Image (tube, rainbow, N blue to C red; front, side, top):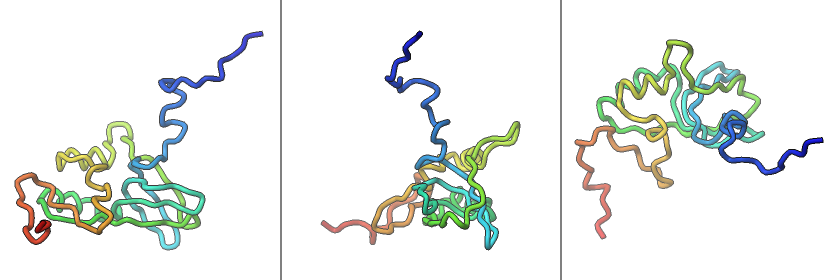
Length: 144
């Protein structure tokens, strides 16, 4: 009789994100019921009580891409959906030849959506414009 090692190899393909694909930082599309809506964004936390995300309503995706591309400042929605409203959560993955929403966002803006949708600061700051050529607002600087 063969004995199998109880030690789990961290590099094992069996332990990669396939066991827990819906981890904080994963990009997902969430379908909600009552009222019906779809939300695209990054998981902040997933618990039996519900899902916390940073993102946008899917219907606003193209407007969001244009806003980021034009360098406008924005604040991603940080929301909690109770589990009874969630009908489906799917990873934002490509489907055959169709790119994922994250890939479309990156292709149009040149930016990583995880970095854009991350929470900038706990003090409620807005994301700065997405272009590197924008100057900081002097009113936001610490005088010290």
